[in-house]
Length: 253
Image 1 (tube, helix red, strand yellow):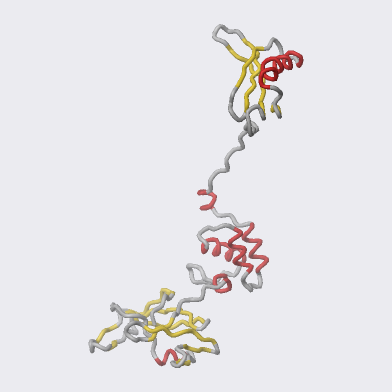
Image 2: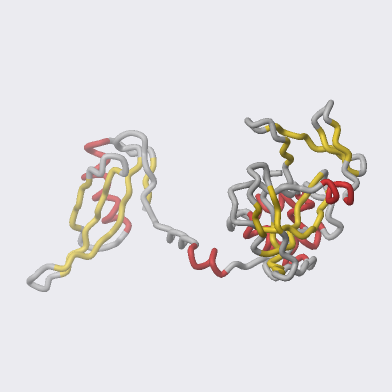
């Protein structure tokens, strides 16, 4: 079978064995390693002889018998404990089966970490899922958890909400600062923004001016005022804007 298997890292050199394949050449294994695969929804761990050859993983008859596997060639399926998986054929006519672990919410929630010890605490599961989705959003991770039948589903969801990732914090974009902007009008003289400004001249004189600007076209009028009194300012607005362009639809201070 051509598969993706997970090695536990166990290697033994005192159990080496010599094999002979179709070409008649004898090949001795380099080492023996424990492999964990998934077939028909069940995980199996077995010892595998590793050789320096371009061949797929071959499963012996004794190994399949120990798994109580039933091969149905009429349906091209393998059955173990009532569950079935399909048998595929290569271009050379050899039978292959997929031993890749099923990627389901329940299987991902119980995945082991690098030290090969299971951590079933909600915090550890939340961290595993966060890395599994490549530091994805919390919403995506929580939707995945909701599809599972894990008994601590609510605790895992709470752990996801409270999860902090140093890598995500380091790479997160800073939120833009709020900027104050004029209200944008739709036509000229729709919205006119006004403000009083104090101008400083090179000769040291200070002069107050009334600045009026159309928010859409940015057409502006600047008029000197003697004081900031209401009558003075209103007079300048009427004489220098309303008398020329009529009353604006809305005035913004």
